[in-house]
Length: 156
Image (tube, rainbow, N blue to C red; front, side, top):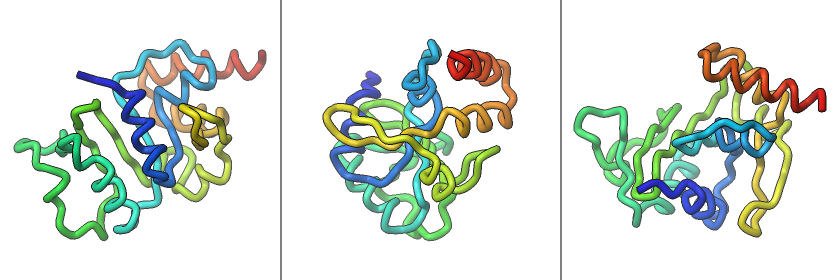
């Protein structure tokens, strides 16, 4: 059962340094898009990845892009070469990236991010301009539909 709100609250409570991106960020900016996963951008280093691993431990995180659905708690052992993680947890799907097409690295995304309060905690959310740039670079029909909504919202 998906509970993306609880998944987001869990990550915020663990004080993980991330920027909320993707569908949740689109909704925060005013899009009517429906999302079925939580997307975040982090600095991919062993310390941050281990922090996420510990945070998700009780929720049985598994790699959703591997045929055997390997446990994220055990695999990979070496966290130094990771660039993206696509996980399935008891709370829902979590996609974690270190670089956003059309925008850049976590540091760039974080620098431009806005800070809002969600569930009584501070959360960094990708800026509307970076979100538009990212969605344009992906170029899928559903992303371009969100771009049109976000550009209309910007014009206000």
